Image 1 (cartoon, one colour):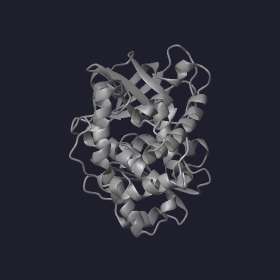
Image 2: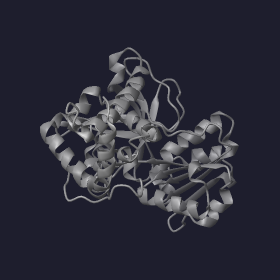
Image 3: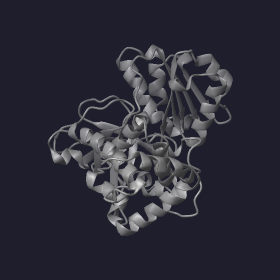
Image 4: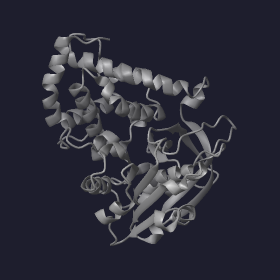
Amino acid sequence: MSITDEQKNIVRSTAPILKENGKEITSIFYKHMFGNHPELLDIFNQTNQKIGSQPLALANTIYFAAENIDHLDVLMPQVKLIAHKHRALTVLPEHYPIVVDTRDHRCAWAAAYGIIAQIFIDIEKQLYDELGPDEQDKGFVPFTIVKKEQVASGPIVALTLERPDHGKMFDYQPGQYLTLRIKKDGNFHNRHYSLLQPFDGKTYRVAIKDEIEREPKGVVSNEIIDNYKEGDTILASFPAGTFALIDDGKHHVFIAGGIGITVLSSMIKQLQKQGKNNTATLIHCTQTKEHAAFSEELQSILDKDQYYLLCGDQRLEKVILQKVLKPDSQVYICGSVPFMDKVEEILKECNHPSSHIHIEAFQPSLSVIKGAVKDQSTTKSL
C-alpha cells in the first residue's frame, strides 16, 4: 500500500475537520460497524463504547496520524500501546478491512488508513509470534480461579489464576495487564486488569474493584465479583502492555488514586526484588484507610518516609510533591482521569520534566490526551 504526495496533502488539509468533529464521525462509524458486524461486540469493551472513550480514542489516533502523515514513526509509542491491546483482544489482520475498504486507491483517507493499518498488523504479528507456535496460546485460554479474596473496601477483590492444563505460562513485565473475558447476555465482554506482582512462574494475580457506583456499571468487574468463585473457570489472554519501569531510573515516585495502586504495587515489588526498594516513594490517595489495598504489604517494603497514605480530606498538594521529587525522579501515575489530570497539573507547577512522567489509564489511553479531538458527540456508538 502506498500514498501519493497529493493524497498526503488532502489528508493534512482535512485534519482540522477531524479535530472538530472526529468523535461524532467515529461514533457513527462504530454504530454502523456493530450493526453490520455484531460479532465484533465480542472484541470491543462495550462500556467504553457507551461512555464514548473508545470513539474518542479512535478519533485521536486518526487525527494524530493525519497530522504526522510524513513522520508516522513519531507515533510509535502510541501504536505499540494500541497494538498490545489489540493482541490481548485477539484483533487479527482480517479485521482491518472491515473498518475501511482500502481497495479504492483513489481515496486519500483509504490510502492513509492502509499505511497505518499495515503498521499495526506488522507489530501485532510480532506480538503474536512471541507467544510461540501453539495457536491456542494466541487467543483466550481457560484459567482456574484458585484464590479469591477481598483485599480492601469497595470492595476490591484479588484473583489468583492457574492454568489447569499445565500449559505454558508466559513471563511479563510489572506494569503489564491480563485481559479477562466473561460471557453475559449472549456476548463476550473483555477487560484489562493490571498484574499485581512479578511473575512467580505458575500463577497470575489481578485485582478487581466493584463498580456499582459507576454509570454505566462495569459489566466484567461486577460479574466477576458477584458471580465467580474459587474453582470456577475464566478465560484470559496472556499478559500485554507497554507501561513499565524506566530501567535506568535512579529514583521512582509512584502516585496512585484508589484502585490505581494495582499496577504500581507490581512495579514497587519488582524494585524490591532487584534490591532497589530504597529508590521508590509511594503516594496513595484513597477514601479511607480501609480502601487502601495492599497497604500493610507495601509498608513492609517501604520505609515510613517513602510511603504517604492520604485519606478523606487529606489532599495531594504541591508541598508534598516538592518534598519527594528529585530532578531525575521518574513519576508513574495511575487513577481516575480527573485524579491524573490534577497530579499532572501539580507536577507542572513543580516544573518537573514531562519526559519523566508516565501515565497508565483505566480507559483507552488515547482518549485522555489533551488538545486533540474535541470530546463531543451527539451520536452514541452503542
